[in-house]
Image (cartoon, rainbow, N blue to C red; front, side, top):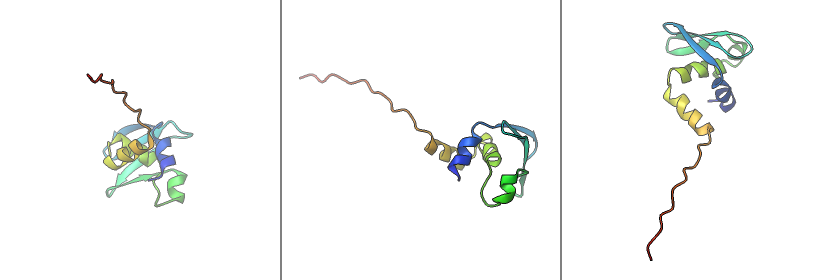
Length: 92
């Protein structure tokens, strides 16, 4: 999964307009993503040129649908803040 495309996908808005049919906005243009035979297909130029690599619009749909692989990849990109634990005083 392409980390740059995934990071850009976070900022896109996804609206489900029908079964397996999504409209993705928030970029330069509106795009349509459809679920076809278990795969997501986008109408953008990036998807057409790079066939095998998922475009940011398909990744945005995967995030919207709660796809475990996409969410795991996103967690790997985001630096989680370290928890500060209260130090306990040790009795001497």
